[in-house]
Amino acid sequence: MSDPRDIPRDIGGFIRDLRQTARISLRELADRAGVSNPYLSQIERGLRKPSAEVLGQIASALRVSTPLMYLRAGLLNEKDGQGVLAAIAADDDLTLAQKQSLTQIYETFRRENARAAQDAADNTEVEKT
Image (cartoon, rainbow, N blue to C red; front, side):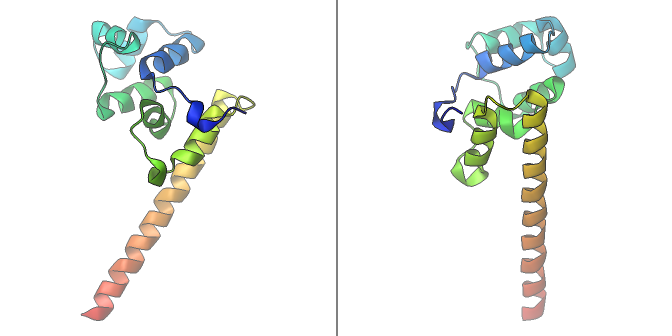
């Protein structure tokens, strides 16, 4: 397994690799993601930096997790779970489908914990009043 810190921040190359692995044309991915073909081409060539929203659309079109896409683009920090997501993304022994499943499970646990923490904070606030 490679070191998670070795993951390249070249989001365009990452998107291109995912697209080619999925055997999807540039035009087809652009249509699925709701972006223009020239814009997607510029992203893949590193000429444009996509917004978080566009990254989410591309992730959805490629059927990869949005946080994984954010991680590869350098939009997540250690507090956001970068260590876990980076380890999943960097593990060469996992298939793309396995990486997606693990990432989704991790995200679900984080959302549940955040919701539980918010509920506990809300209950504490109600008790104070």
